[in-house]
Length: 108
Image (cartoon, rainbow, N blue to C red):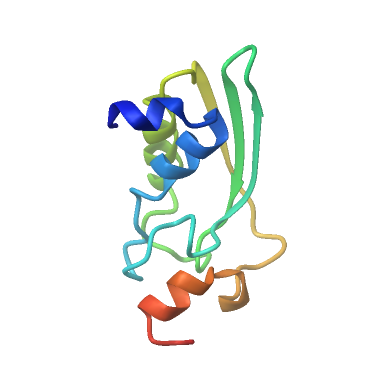
């Protein structure tokens, strides 16, 4: 992460880190794809709780992806511990995607 990034609020640094991970089936990062449902943080303790989903329950990375997300977020300066929870309700839909993701996929 570049030095200017450390000047950003912790939440923004975490979002930047999440944007480095891509869904294996869609060429868009998991944040803009809308897979992150909640991002709760306690800055004083450096703890992060993320609720996320996958594009489909049968996603081939369902078992490994939470660990990947946890590893990337734990590298953010100021984060000491991250818990990642996979949830299926509400189900992911394309409406959760950011405008940038839709443009990237030619859907806008």
